[in-house]
Image (cartoon, rainbow, N blue to C red; front, side, top):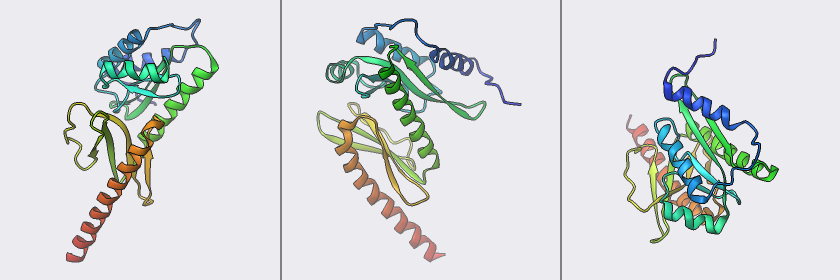
Length: 216
């Protein structure tokens, strides 16, 4: 028998995910602020279930705006990358030990639907990779100061200063490969710089493990 979510918020989240799959009768025509408000309400309502950086707004060119991003920055990015076309988010259901992905469209057209699906699949791939990782790191950027910060899986409570936004993650898997996960192509250079830093940390940890092994 398949286990059933046993908390009210988990059941509400399942209903929300299921409801979002229904085809729209017409476009929602939300203003940018209305779309942001919808995102923030979803983020707050199911806060304990979201797998960071979920949930996020998806813009016309597949650029994403996480709920944690300052509203002023969201509005600036909307001017550059197009109007919000939907919301995507990956969430964890603790009582049944599985995750779900929200795909909420604001538009009926096929192009928008495909863009939402691309963003959702990227979320699925990143979550799976982080679960299977030997070491992983979340990458943050303060664009005004052009500074990068990284939070490693071996130090999950590491604080990130205000002004930084999450732009992606890096994963080192058991096959000894390093992979970057990010959706906003504008951050490709940032992720490449972060990857170089990440690889140095991985190399250092491997050296420590070898030294410890020799001592034994």
